[in-house]
Length: 304
Image: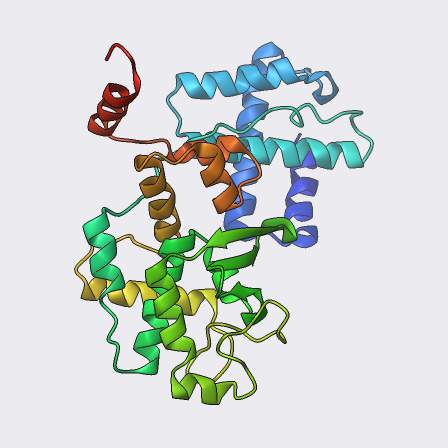
């Protein structure tokens, strides 16, 4: 085992270019598993390790009340180690391949409506930057799009007449999402500002989907805004509006889904608007308060 660990260490550092800290963790995890195997005798061979034995090892960690994040890392360590052995012909199959990582699903952070309104109304309307920032906040909350989708948005994907945006999401999948009236107004005010039009003089403010590609949101130098810049913009107005800390652009996506759900929208509709491939992912937003659940029950159940 010592010789294998030494080769595995070089593989992690030289071939996979992992950090020294990660390499130490991986080696420590495999060493802990080796100590577990020694219960079955000093001559226990790695080729005899099977998924049930792997699960027994992780069951012992659960019993020891290890954090799920720690257990997930140990699974990754052993999966990498046994894949290393398989690729070198020392074992036939990777016994950790079928072992699932523990899932620790935390409820997403979301804002109350008064908090969202204070955040959205924080930017000043007397400058191009303020109009842009207001439009960004309105669009994020109105559509629930990811920040990466927002910054990659082109003018040709806007349909102002219908109040729709064609969003290209993960896996290059496209979906339609809806702009509410306040978001449309904020976006129109930004795009029609003389300084904004001067930055793209050939762009039509009422751009149709067939128009030439041009970024919707620009930085002050005329280039496409980045996700990091949007995060800084949101953080600026979170502080200015005295909203609780820990709010990011993704918080507005969570808030969008939560508010729709609380207002009675179905999970399938929210799934479509968010661009989730699986309904189970959207189910993460089903975290209504007890009062909301009781009110929904009272309205819907015939014998409530």
